Length: 293
Image (cartoon, rainbow, N blue to C red; front, top):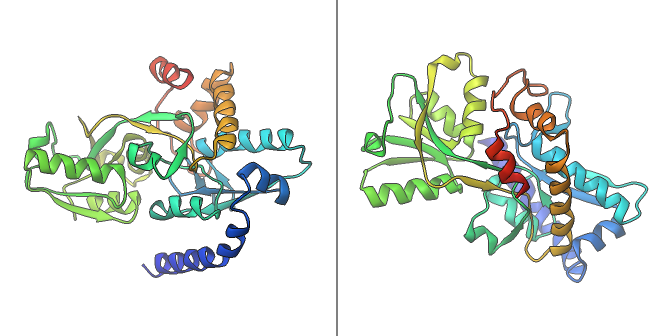
């Protein structure tokens, strides 16, 4: 808790210190600012395999690699010999604020594209679609939503999962006790420590936490899904259409490359760098069609 409070305090100071600079840059587009300062600030969170920091301090991940394509393209288009790429921790609840205060230029992590968020930020072409499922102890059973009635469910604060869980609870009158947690890791830990009957999150992160545990056989994943599939995208400042054009172009190029399956497998169907776990989620033909549409 002390570390989280310290991080929030630091981010508050950053917001204040950047205020003067941000005001001076109000009339500059992101591309103009990058060209002028030769720096791009990329937000990330530790959510494997999308983005995470390795033990030697490097920020890596599926979305980080996609954003590296963008930074290389920016160097060419803006005729920059050098471009400094700063990776900035962007907590889930502060990512939109950090974007709109020019602290970060892109958020390259796990971001669900929703109608509400589209009023605050701009999303790229989607880089993945995932279902939301319930994770639980292997002895627990969730065959349908009625099995949740009266249960304690842990979920991440400020997430689409929380919105969908509240909606399910309200519509079906399940009388859930919803245990809101600061991060998806803490949501999983609450279930693992039996503080909640189940946790709810995207199936990729759920698989990652289970595979990273001391005993993966201890856990189970529901066939039941919560809500519609989640469309994930890179977030940018609202109205930042020039940068979106470049991001979307680079994503389209990457998804259509002949070696895209190998690129995808690196993050979803192989041992993750510095993690020594395999999610065993190969690229399906349906997912590839979704990406290149």
